[in-house]
Length: 546
Image (cartoon, rainbow, N blue to C red; front, side, top):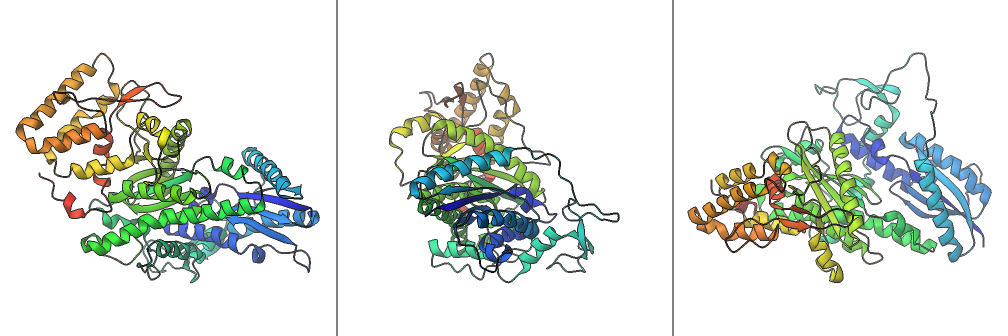
């Protein structure tokens, strides 16, 4: 029987979700998208008395694959779907097709043609588009982009709050806030169910979303820093193009959605268990609120807010869980970018920094061609992110760091992975191993790994290495007890020290790049306060000798 396949993909989901002044409205944007995907029949006005004969193959995360029995109905639905999406969310939807197919073999070809058409349509410039015009108008005070349709406070925000005076608001911002306040919470309910599916002894159903997400999460860090973690699946388009039937495509989509929620739920569950074991970790204000806050969970696109102290271990668990969940049907990996910043740093800017870092890390993963995920990270001090380090013979970072599920044997890929860098697990383990390193030694290491490290070359590297070796010799003589842990870190994050215990750079070879020398110790020092292990007693890290 001949059927007709339609494909659609939401445009600029991050822009849609972040088009608000308040972080809590980001919840509403993600929930609005989830609601549209699950209630597509109610949101799309059917033109005929008889509903169209169609099947939903994919309808999650802003992506749709719909199969119709009638070509005319598919064309009508195509127009209605785009209009309904804009009406419901204020965003735009790219829709292509329909493509005709009659069996599983033809479906695979139709799906590949639609995938190529979708990519071409989304990358094609559509030229100027006429906006709405009116003689008397006001822009939304929340997003600053759309025309206002109402005047007042956002749903759920008290009118007497000092920063919540009535203001002009557009329909998308109003809808996001309204969805956030609605009793039915498809977005976070899915997150809570995923936590309990993986850790049945935890009761997360009674844990509300924090009204001030960044302020709540900042309570886990004594300096008020938070972590934004962005993640994206690697080479997902190629994996979807391999689907040769409706069943294959739906299985891939369903598994991807489950893996995305599981990868957020696993570190969240570990945080909850940590809070149960060590009550001193629990925040003083609203201690029962969710400790990890998902902001975007659409397909393989993830963005969450997490406690800064455990940022690296959370990213490690996220990547491991995602890869393990997807391994049952395909060798899918993921890349994550961690951005550490003050709680009041604009979340949209943090997202932009993460996106840029993610792009570079994904290129490294792609060139490596091994079944490993990757994590990169950056600390924003003040108002500016760290400048990109120029390519040179000696570098102050080994980023990105590799992650893979412990049950996965890399076999023939292990040598290539080791030559291309270090595992993130090693970085977290060495932070714990060096927990008793005196503060004075840490300050000295920070000075050695200062800005001038990026200027090292063949002419001045002997001088710098001599300074480093002198420092290490002093550690061996003055505090001999500190030497084994420091030697272990030097080896795990670099190379085997010389017989005299000198500093040895790690030679890094990555496909498509010239070989360079680097060491993981500068990364560990930069992330010193954000590499706590979720399995360890946090009091162990506080026992550092001053």
